Image 1: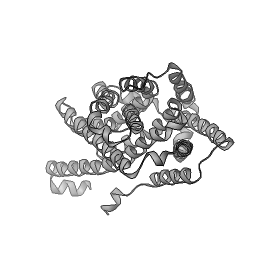
Image 2: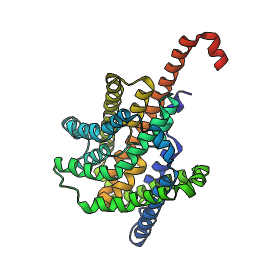
Image 3: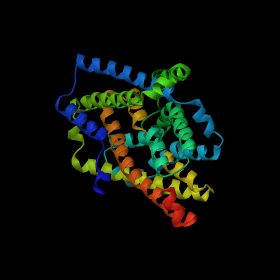
Image 4: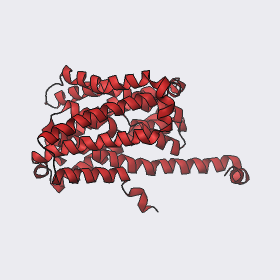
Length: 337
């Protein structure tokens, strides 16, 4: 049973299968153009559905806890980029320069939505605040991430991000999201009743981007540039970034005087990075031949954060159960259970 906690989920297996398919059968020529068009359409539909799903009432209900939301946003958009730059002397020798650019891009991404809320709920944290923080992070990231990417890459000696790239992000991601929010009053109920549809579009769009990205990268000689030793180095880099973020968000939230439920929300919303937002943004911001190197760190960090946070959420929940038994006593606990 404990071994299953560390096994990859079905979506991760699909990602691995997609990378293998792109490595063996990369799309090229007219087929690549068709896949690019399909990918753009799927991404637009994804953000439209996310806009239609997001309940304004749920967001408003969590807005009062502004200190928590500012802390989460600071962790996501300030702490992570600073870690990516500050740890460069230690971590960059472990990977290639191209992969480290992918790591820096990872540091600028918004938080996840679904898994942040799910882990907060599992750990018995402040779920309404998690809904608000994760949703706000995802929405703000559409604009902040490309700007941060430009600043971080410029400090890394890679040149500034063009305003045209920011405009493309807004057009391809933000406009469909706003359109979904406008249509939320009519489509919100239908979308809530068909949540698997969003999951299908979500995962399908990511798999399409991964396939086209790795196809282009394989044709450019990706696997000659990324041996097994470099993948091992990337694993260490991702693990170190996540570990430092988890420690800072946990003990930082306590130092700031947050209670246990808010601490849980800060830990799970402030330490995570979104694969669903990151992959579409990377497609717009980076050239096709570099995209595989950019997406690879996001995919690896995604799996590490899921496995680590699953274990951490269970420990939080177990600790909450122990504390509750101490407060209410054995008899009341048995009745409540």
